[in-house]
Length: 72
Image (cartoon, rainbow, N blue to C red; front, side, top):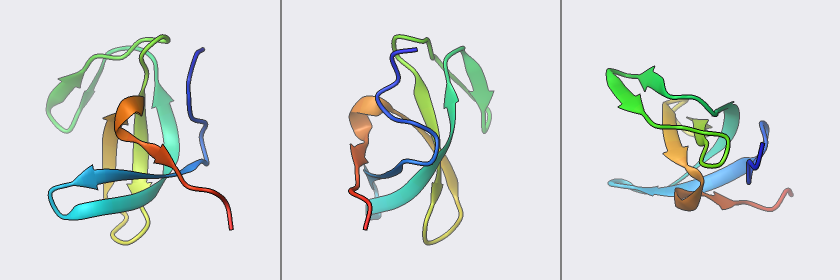
């Protein structure tokens, strides 16, 4: 798998509400239906399931939308 990130990585991404931070909880490498929408995924271009630090909301994003946050 050519995943850029790993489960447990702390990342941030841009949303309508501003910059959001969260933790990757799953990596999808096959197409998946998520919240009523199909997300195209592959080993070469995975999508990451991320749980927000503030709201516990779960989102799915491609790697190019994410930035890794250094551990404290």
